[in-house]
Image 1: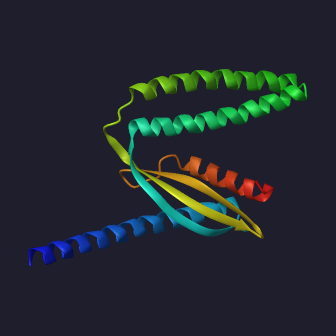
Image 2: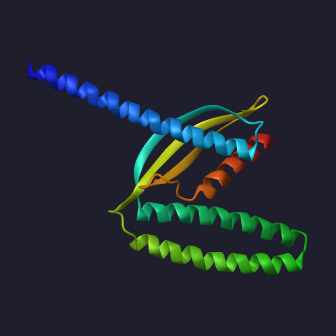
Image 3: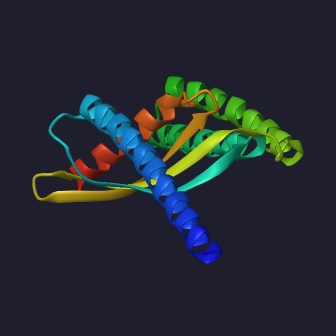
Length: 174
């Protein structure tokens, strides 16, 4: 009798957990669709899958910010290289100033990451996989949804930027 009650309890627990994860996945998918529609209404979402959910710590959040900052640094570096090839001195000076500033910020952020708290949770980091389509072209990609304890999206602008980049790559055929 005890084993039947134990099995029933486990089955109910698993069913509730699956329903909760499915609910999160549906909410994330709806948010993604809304953002995709803003980026380009002609792009179709073929699939969206919640792959993993992890606790988001201060240290994790700072590392996430650092990776986005490095991504932006590389974009400015490419603009600097283009200006250099085209010998646009006014642009070179501007981009050089941006790169110098960003280098200092990245160095400081990396120092803070080494000392950051990795015990207190800020929220949950949802890692999702998706596929979008435009005509006969498809693009598979990952998206990270950092959600605060209050349920709000942390840095939604980064999610919008990622979706926009994915749409651009889809159109280019990358």
